[in-house]
Length: 238
Image (cartoon, rainbow, N blue to C red; front, side, top):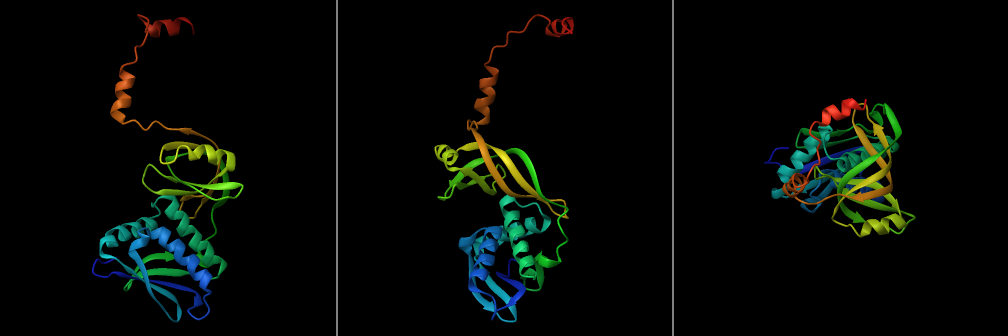
């Protein structure tokens, strides 16, 4: 995105401006805002006719950040939560039998192939594992409560859920580093990217938030009771 150009045009050919339902347009724009980040610096100034073409103004201070985020999405290296939003937009487009493109002037920023996207190589893969990050948000009143992390790379990880009783325990560790254990559902795209669809939290543990220097000093202070020749002792009992 050229720094001189601060307007983005998002052409969605699934509908015309006259036929696009308002709630559907709101869903699309919500996911786009999550994907690009800096939502407070993105402003919808008009919707052009023909296809549905929302035109967004980007505040000066956010231009470089939005540009970098867009490049990361196009390359498939953006944080998990960001790629989730990109994925959800493509799923919506596929359902609407459409595709879309984000433009900066005449330069294509991000293509959204929608219905033209090749089928996923693998979908709905269940895998037990863990997620690390700072516990950022817990909310909702359903039986499974949404939980949001900020990953070690700085991106948001959404799509995590915990039962109410476990969510209540997690609430005592808000803004602390944690490790979530559970079962995730993943999709592998044709580009070889693994996208987290949903993660059901079963247990968790609080991670040590002490500075690395303090951790190293603590390890060095531990006195080891080594025998004179520990290797010989090990070999002796083989």
